[in-house]
Length: 308
Image 1 (cartoon, rainbow, N blue to C red):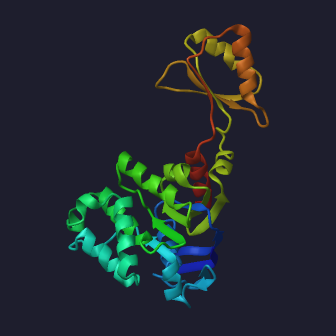
Image 2 (cartoon, rainbow, N blue to C red):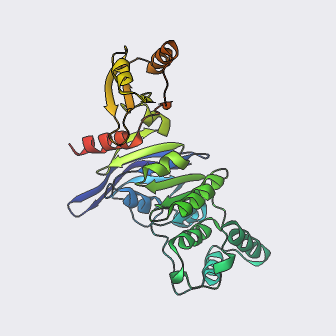
Image 3 (cartoon, rainbow, N blue to C red):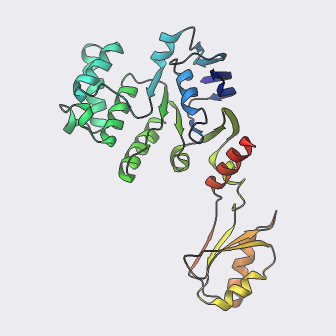
């Protein structure tokens, strides 16, 4: 596992990370989430040994990062933010270089390279300089170098930031496949990333942890959790639904007339009440669903409260 205990880092008068502690176990995909400037990248740098903490310890499968850096680096795959690489090198020469410094030789090296090239669909760009590649291909090359030595732990810093929707889907699909074989920490400010691939979320704001929960647990903190979305075709029906018991508040969609979000009172399961009203009165509805909760609202509340 990866264990982070009481991590602290200051730059002059600015405290970037303040007393952070959490553990990540095999099988988990941890979303390390926070607004820009929250301390995510600084934490990732300390976790991977790029920066030394002022206080605190990081252990990777029992090895302390600052005491046993080489042992830790053998166990980690790291994709830094932006997937930096030697731009003048071709994809193939760069991956060969990475294989060499990872200690891969002979048939094992050839097998691993062939596997990574095929898995990340890099065949068409092998001879191209990395600096000429699209963002999507640069991320693929970055992931290839991170997993070439088959590490049991992966640290990915903003792996899909700046990619188009198709590229994001491809990278997330690969990360989900990798999660079957190793623990993964993904540093991101993208809420959609958490919902798409993470089994657990740690939210950081102003250098401090403000939440540690599964995405579903965070959604349950939302005021929209189990709210009922209903689209009614006739204005008169909106007046009738508004007087149903158990409704605390109604939000109208300004873009679509008749589309309402019914917020339940605390402890009330509103959906059966609405469904019974529809059935009893034979009401025509264009849309009916239950909200899971909104991570963006929870994230905003948690990170705003942390600044107060």
